[in-house]
Amino acid sequence: MQAFFAQDWLIHLDWGIFAFFEKLWNPVLDVIMTFITYLGDDGIVWLVLALGLLISRKTRKYGCYIILGIGFAAAINNGLIKNLVERPRPFNFTWPEDCPYVYPDVVARPESWSFPSGHTSSSFGAALPLLLRAKKKFGIPAIVLAFLIGVSRIYVHVHYPTDVIVGMIVGIIAGLIATLVLDKLLMPKVFPWVNAKIKRNVLPTLEPKHSKLEEEAA
Image (cartoon, rainbow, N blue to C red; front, top):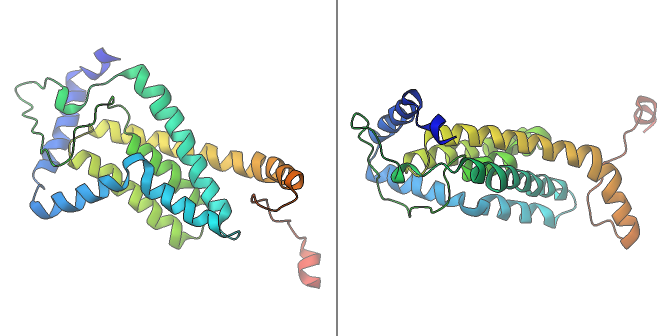
C-alpha cells in the first residue's frame, strides 16, 4: 500500500487540494475549523447526541442507530484499514519539492495512522442512519455536520484529502450496515427477546404495522 500512496498523481491530487485550503487560511476560520474538528474527537458530539436520544423511549432507537453506526465505523476504519495500510500523517510525509506542504499547527498532531479519517468515518456512520430514519430536519443537519468535520480535517492538515474521501465512504457503509442490522435483526428479534427476559420495555422495537382496513376503522 505504501507504493500506491507514493504515486505522483495521488501525491499531487492531495497537495492540490491542500493548496486550495491554504488559500482560505485566516484567524477566523482557524477558530471555527478547530472547534469543528474537536467536535469529532473520539466521536464526542455523536456520543453526546446518542446519550441524549437514549433518554426518551420515543427517540431511543435513534440513539441506537448512532451508537451502532459509530461502532461499525470504528471497527472497519480504526480496527482494520488503518492498521493494514499504515499511511503516515501528511506532516510526517516527505513531500516532493514541487509540493510545498505547510502544516498550520493549529491542533495537536495525532500519533495514529492517517488512512482513512476516523473523524469522518465515525461522523458519517452516525449521521447517515439519522438521514435515513429520522425526520429530515434532524437528518440533514447531521449529514452537514459530518461533512464539515471531514472538511475540517483537511483544513487543519492532519489528514490527506483522500483520507477524508475514503473515510466518508467507510462511514456511509458503516451507517448502512448499522441501519440494516437494527431494522432487520435487533429491533424485530433481539431487542423484543431481551425486553421479555427482563420484563421491561427498555430497548426499542419495531412498531407494529397496521393494515389499511385497521387504519380506516381507527
